[in-house]
Length: 165
Image (cartoon, rainbow, N blue to C red; front, top):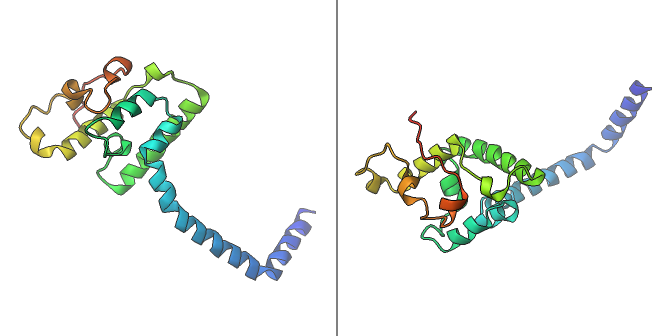
């Protein structure tokens, strides 16, 4: 029975090869054309705040000196393309599951150890000229916690210990 069904499928594909090739090409082109726009939108702050329980942080970011930067500029690794998209997938999946299942309340949002190190690296990357003159043993958010997110000092539980690699 299974063998007979498989033969029918193979025969159908043989008779309609042109249709399958055409549909495959159209699908690949459609994905190729839309993927950059999907990636661009998924990296925008408007996308992050749609389902992320950080409305207060978004509102304060919108009025900060860093409002011309995206969330990913600070909160994802920017050292190379692969590392960036691997962690975008990891963090995005973690946020999606947490937000969808309601695993955390808004006051429980905090940076992981990895997130703290990424944030520190990105502060140094953008402000390299300034931070070259200060003690790098401290996390930038020790003193500049409210630069981008005005309300985070009270609502987020940042542990500011920086792990040296």
